[in-house]
Structures are given as structure tokens and as C-alpha cells.
Length: 146
Image (cartoon, rainbow, N blue to C red; front, top):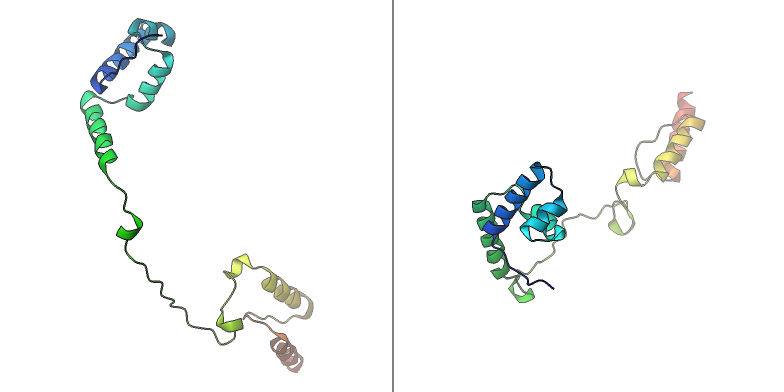
């Protein structure tokens, strides 16, 4: 097994540039890696991590990675206390003061029933909740108009 060598970002970028030269001369990735004494897997990993960078950008990247390892996450006792406040006013017509189960586009049942009522009888009810009393009143109003 070959001895593992740790390369600095500057050395990695130099090796990647050398590999680009070999590839432009018509060599394969495997041949270029053999000349540079690195594995193809290492070449592709380096290219993914450092591809297109210059030396100063690579240095900044490594400094930021080192700085990020030193940052600490706040613990539960260091986070602010969140106090929930309900701002909803109970609706007088809804069950237990609720206005609705969800947004009306996600509940197509009532609009479908009211559209069927319009298609069959000719009365248009646009307000919800449309209970029996509202429908009967609309039918009586239609009879008076006809």
C-alpha cells in the first residue's frame, strides 16, 4: 500500500493544472493520474472541490472551513423563549368559533354542491356556510322572481 500524502490546497491546484495540460496533450485521465502519482478517484474529488479555483481562493476556502469548525451551535438553554400568541378572533358561525378547516381551494366539496345546485335549479349561492335555511330562502326568492 502506498504511503498517504497530504497535499496543501496550493499543491492540489498545481496538480490539477498539470493534469489539464496532460489531458490537452491527448492523454487519458488514468495516464495523467499515473504521471502525477494520484488515483483517479482523488483526481475527480479534487476537481469537484477545487475545480476552477486559483490558489488564493483555495486558501480562503480552507480558512473558512477551519473557522466553521470552531463555531458552536446554541444549546436549548441558550435559545430565546418563544411565547405563542393566538391572534385569531372566534367566528360566530363556525363550530367552536373556527372559520374553516383549511383554505377553500383545498376543500372542493361545498363549491361542487353549490355549482350543482345552480346547474339544476338556477340559484347561485356564493357564501359559506350554505345551510338548509339559506338554500330554502334562495329557492323562495327565485319562486317570487319567476
